[in-house]
Structure formats: C-alpha cells, structure tokens
Image 1: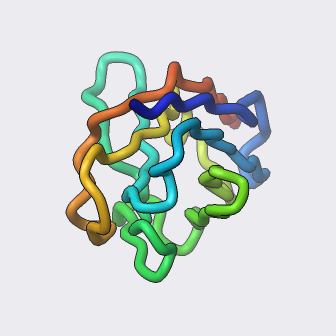
Image 2: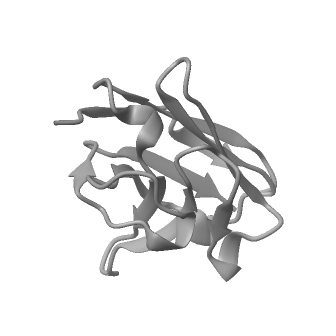
Length: 124
C-alpha cells in the first residue's frame, strides 16, 4: 500500500509560481513511477507530468511543457511539481498518483494510488 499526501496548492496570480509536494508512505516508493494529474470543473482528469522510479526520465503534457517541472527525492519519499508562468487555465485540483508496479518508465505510469488532491487557483 502507498499513501499519498499533497500540499502546496493555493491562489496565485497569472504569471506566478507554485510548488506542489507529494509525500508518500511505504518502503517501495523509490521503485515506483509517480505523476501529477489535474481536474478542472466539468472536465476529465488529465495527466500533467510523470517521472520514472529513478527520476531519470520524465513526461509532460503539451500544455505544460516548458512551464512545469516534475522531480523526486527518493530519500524523502517525496515528489514535486514546480509550476511557473501559471495561467488561469491551470486552475484545477491537482492529484498525486503512484503506480503499483515497479521500475517503469514515466510514460508507462498507471494511477493505482491517489492522494486527496490540492486546489490550485490562478487569477487573471
């Protein structure tokens, strides 16, 4: 089992930055691909970014490429999402997810475990 707790959401003006954190429990964290999804009101949940078990490869949705950076610290069992140049259309609940399998690439991410989500609101 993996438990995930997100933090770092909030209200920010367009052009600003936020850093989301996802603290994971469980001894197998460092072997799991991780990712961030988001869901805006009335829209489906979408993948924002993912990272493989070692941090060596990452994947980004086209909408956030060049603005968001995903990273992980396996010593701290934590995954981060640095969000820069935020836009009002980035407003959503952001969810951290972990793949239940081990040693996979970022593109193979499957959301088996989920956090409770953290709200990000970008004002224009």
